[in-house]
Image 1: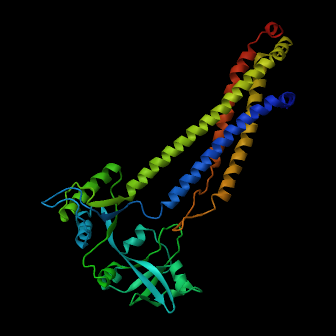
Image 2 (image 1 turned 135 degrees about the horizontal axis):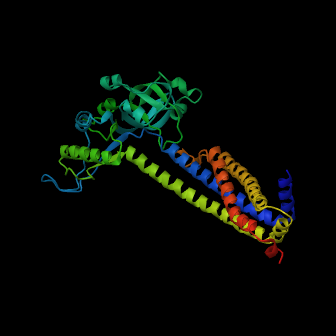
Amino acid sequence: MELLNEIWQTARRNKLRTSLTGFAVAWGIFMLVVLLGAGNGLINAQQQNSGQWVDNSMMIFGGVTSKPYDGLKEGRNVQLDDNDLVTTQTRFRQNVDKAGALLYASSDITLGENYVSSQLRGVYPIDAEINKKKLAAGRFINDIDLRDRRKVLVIPENQARELLPHNPRSLLGKVVKVGDLAFTVVGIEQEDKSRMSSDVDVPFTTMQTIYNQGNHVERIAFTFHGLATEADNAAFEQRYRATINRQHRAAPDDEDAIWIWNRFTQAMQMQKGIGILQTALWIIGLFTLLSGIVGVSNIMLITVRERTREFGIRKAIGASPSSILRIIITESVVITGLFGYVGMLLGIAANLYMDATLGSKPIETGLFTTTVFVDPTVSLGTCVGVTAVLVVAGTIAGLMPALKAARVRPVEALK
């Protein structure tokens, strides 16, 4: 208590010096916590917005050939078909789990006097898994719907609200008109404002029949396993592209003949980007923290220089070098720890403010709703760890001038 009281009296006599030291420490901690919190908010938002589908999935699109092959010129449109879907399911079964296809068409859906203009999607049951669809009521398209070419549909909740404004979920089981045909609503998809579109799903085979598409396929989608690295995925894509290209008399290495959207490699690239962002934030934060450490070091050097006469008198009347060392080190630890704790609390408060404002404020783009910040906070362990690092650094910063002060000779100090 006597030592702490002495430190308090010294701080009172040197208010400006103590304030500058405390500000340097608190500012370093505050900026580091805020930077890490803001970075985490951006990262969490990006992961949430991109988590609308499973990572281990691919989407295949038809393209335009860019090379002449097999006597045919470049510039031909490649149209995917049912044979490509069968090939995907059979020849690549060692990696492909489930596969499906998609078709698109536009139509009005009518119930009594109410109607809504929608885009129809002919889908397979795997579509619900790939796109992580959640149902508010009923079920999704199943294999029996595909086999029997049933006229059933799954409608988004926001469009169900257009048809039955007072009780949209009671639309389940009702018959609606899609164009001139009667369809039964078997499912109502839970509304998700983060998606860019809200399509009405019908069985793929029903779409092919109604719109006379033959064996036409617009897209192929499938989930896969056993491709853990970028090299594995690249090798699979090369084999897959060569196989599908040959079925359409396109060069096996023509990357424009079909397009492959590999969500797994996209997720891996995103993780790399997140890692780079986190590293950059830590580097910037640590440099900010370093500026605080440098400030503490400089002020501690000034403190020792100003108190040289005092230390000389202390040694002249019998103070040991260790007691002088203890005074300076304790003062450094107390000031650094106290103001570091204040900076940590202010940083946490700033992160909570960002979470309460930006974090809970969705942005309307016109097509979908997204968020910029999601939980822009830093874990308590990180905050405590950063504060502890600065306390240790402040102690080390005060150690060098303390050792110098402990070695001063009383005669030299009193000159």
